Image (tube, rainbow, N blue to C red; front, side, top):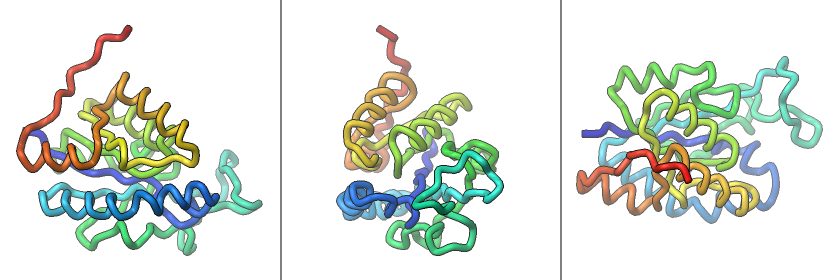
Amino acid sequence: MSRYAILTNDLQRDLVDKNEQRKANVERMTPDFTRFLSEMRELNVPVIHLQLIYDEGDKKIELHDGRIPVLRGTPGAELLPEFVHPSDVIMEKKKDSGFFETKLHEYLEEHGIDTVIITGMQAQVCIQTTAADAHFRGYNVIVPSDGVVSTRDEDRVRALEWLASYCAVVVPMTDVVARIRDKAGFDFSVQALA
């Protein structure tokens, strides 16, 4: 039987508020996403928030309005409180993938987790890189189609198509909850490449 964990990506004030479209997309997702996280916690699925923290010395940082966003200790680096529960785990990352130079892999192994459910933003960047890195490490990967956002919807759609064709089961959040609750499982068999 699979052991699951939810991974959220970059649900932080500086990143969500970067532009109006991104902010609107997260706001639109929020009611269903907070319900999804609550239902997952009720099913004893751990929630791990991947919190991007930039290093001021990193020369490859995308500036926001001429400043470095998500610096440690700044209000903009904080996770959005509506998504965080005291039982959740917060794990810092410094690049797009939640596995790059973090303790995520060790944490998942230590807790016997073999399946990650990757959520948050941006679908074409942090979701894809975290999913690919999870896949490379042997994890089963699920991406809820309505549990990820991008600034532009075409980027989200393209990322979901790539994920489904390569390394992830892509289904709506309600299906994820139902399959885990009913112990129905998921088909992680690899699709034949066309």
